[in-house]
Length: 148
Image 1 (cartoon, rainbow, N blue to C red):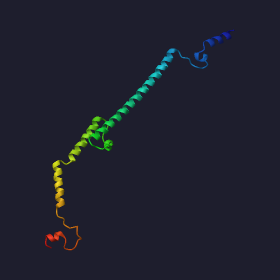
Image 2 (image 1 turned 90 degrees about the vertical axis):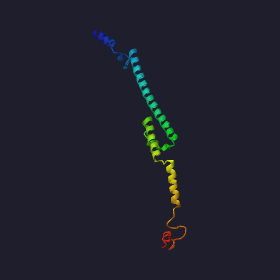
Image 3 (image 1 turned 135 degrees about the horizontal axis):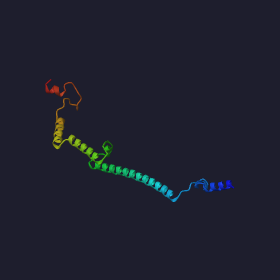
Image 4 (image 1 turned 180 degrees about the horizontal axis):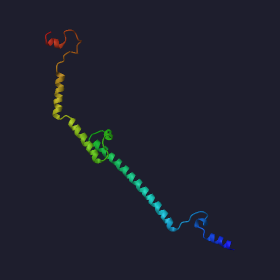
């Protein structure tokens, strides 16, 4: 009989996993803890994804605004990749440098008039050879000027 009592006591002391056929049972607090942990992980993942999407959207918006600034200043869009686009301040600084270089290398109105006058004077200057007629001995203008 003692053996039967011992077997019955062993069955009564069995763990919950043994009683449910090898499956572990959870009390309400354990279930709540598991659910809270999974919800926290999901929220963190969603927050991280949202942050990445916001950052990507901000970068796209910045590139569009930068492209518009280039167009407004009369520059081609193709120079966008050559400029520092890390921040709006850096981009504006790069554009100001380009503006300064162009102003520095673009002639003023008086310089343009002077260059035009030089071109006209060069066009009107006498030529040393007359290319309109075939070259013959004695038709060289220098020879004529020196009475040779």
